[in-house]
Length: 324
Image (cartoon, rainbow, N blue to C red; front, top):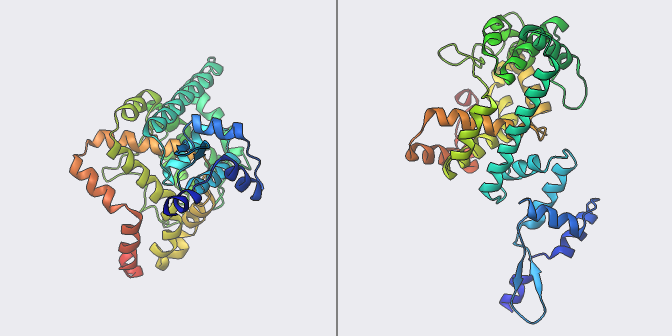
């Protein structure tokens, strides 16, 4: 009886299809086969006995529902896989690496296509053209519109962002004065006193702006990352996407006016993050982590500190002023 009860709460393919249908999603046996092949779902196991019975591990129902949630938001199965992995589902790390490497290849292809289409323009004119296009975008996938910005300033912020994404160091140096516009675009700068930018500036302690890795720079950290480094990357992205939006109002409870744009940005852009944000954040963090070359003990300490229960306990023990 114990064995039968143990098997009873493990779904088969028909149960998963029925579950999806009950939530308004059309899932077929062929869909399940594709998702298993791509690593988005675990494989079922044949149970001992007379009639062949193939059952999935416990928890596959929740994984399927999150899978179809992300599938409705992106056509990329790689983005779905990385979203599931960040959310804590058991995804094979080889599948994670391959999804990240394919993201890097698509990133390189995008850069090559943009550069090829602008062969008759210099770098400055090329970036300005992309910035104008990006600044005017509206709707899904567009950049946030928080505090009121002149279109010219928004274009300058987008110009710096484009130069960073394309790894054009000369253009980044030339556009250094546009960093405050980018901070305003992201909700870190507001009003005449700088808003949150004195505390949450995009610059590091040495005054340098962080750099996105080029596709060439991103490949090696992805292929060489240890399981511990990947786990730390997962927990950092979890913290950024799922804790930060809830924590910001408490962190800046005594500076609401300054933080209102940053809180709005977190609520609108991170509460339901675009699926394409997952590979970008993971890749960028792995590149940064590789440059620091932490010891195994340091990695484990950071992983333990970023466990969700640890974060909750630490926040609960502090006053609002202490959290700030």
